[in-house]
Image 1: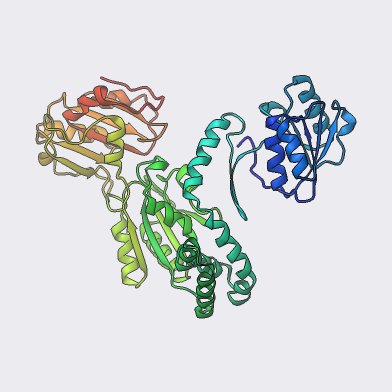
Image 2: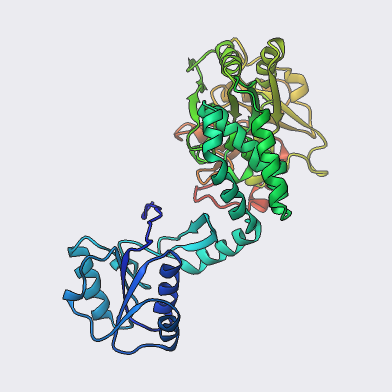
Length: 467
């Protein structure tokens, strides 16, 4: 993060703008909207700035810039087409520890103007750090279409009720839940419909009906998908952003965790081979205990919670203890990784069925139905099989699979660290022997793997090795 996002209060604050062309006029207009008192220094005054001077109380000095002009200003903007002047303005402001922006010259700036969505008192800002301002404006245009102007009215209504709500609902967590009901329910819909009076009455009713008691918590069992953050479902994102606690495993990426509510508690319960942060039974009880405290708990698991995710065990405990929960499916690793590697799991010329198995059983053995898995015309997907890969290949060949049956190992699929190593049952162990394989990995076995070179579309920057 090259620039720390911050909102500065400029009401009644003195600000200096050097330059008086069209670009300077746009910056002056923004500063005036924030209530700033503007001084403009320029030898030539453009039409737009002259119009602002006629309409607003701004001070215009027709002169060349001098270092003595910078004093006691909250911030300074230089918007001239003269590089030497811009450099002098920036240097002077930096020496006096005054925030300065030089238009179209990020190297000289201590702050930059973001693209702004103004729904006062709600204000959103988007910045590219000066690298791609046009892209920032395009993103702002997208957000403008989904953030109704009525959100400002909703915020103003909430401001009027802020103190009464705080007085009646003492616990911060309970207040948060109350306001979420307001902002996501009938009160908000009435505001959006333009019925302010009815919205206020409804909010008063909600407050009067509210009981200052511990609410019933719940658990959201969320599949985080195979790795890429933008493969989350809309429901998963919404529930993560309202959860008070996020309980996550080691296959959940930092990018996905960053989408959770900033002030939510994060609890890591990841399990590695022979190294469990918490045993599964303890995780089950943890979820139940947190919910009994009235908390909304997002249990975030890599892939899909019901495909080798032990989600069934977790909700069994919740059901036994009468705790409300919901399950949000995720894109399982088999589907996500195969798609990003360009390997169809089924294909009429290669495979008419697909079997998912785990290569890691309770007793650390690899004891599967080898006769079934060695049958032709199918795709076999093995989760958690990298450690026992050599045993898996040997067992399949011993039960009739050809030595040249294609196999792919996909490391950290769907992410920028994706790596695909392809070979055969006879060669794959040697191919990965000198590779530093990082979890999570997925193994795909079958002739569909031969389509990888032809259909691979996702470029991760990692080399693809073939036998």
